[in-house]
Image 1 (cartoon, rainbow, N blue to C red):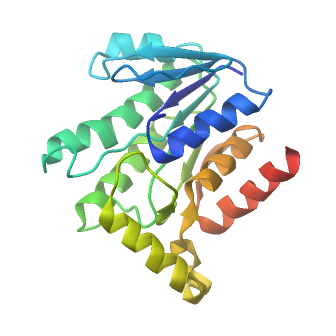
Image 2 (cartoon, rainbow, N blue to C red):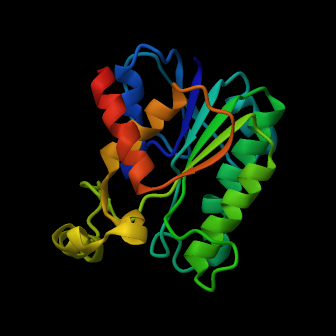
Length: 225
């Protein structure tokens, strides 16, 4: 399978790249990048892309069987500019879905967020919900949307608030039961394992996967290794 990965420099994206390289089921792995990053490895093809250039973006995606999209930013990185935030978190995945549909991609796997809702009053959750809706509307044969809560793992950049949140969530996650289980923290590596396992399944239509579904897929992925 020819696979395109968007967002490889992020926490989940980095684990996705490792998992894809380690699995012989995946052939060429195209890594789309906004800036040069030294990603050396087997079957890996780096492509610098201006995501605002529709033709260049389409050419980079064309021929992909699968698209993994784990791209995302923060308010700090965009200096509080909500339009810049939207260009990354909405435009890049939505255009990936539309261009993937045009060029014959069969399955897009997207990292979203627990609580995503296009009608939310919260900017982040509303944007994630709008992105999900637009990606589904693109009409790919299969769309799998992953909604993790707090991600556990070490990022390249230090986020003090996130580190504190990770400790608190890990300490009190036992109290998240029943309908609250979807808010349990999850290792970024486990999200990546779940996505790779789902990519190898015979997926059809639109599906949303939260904590329990990701945890089960992660176990099946570990069993197959």
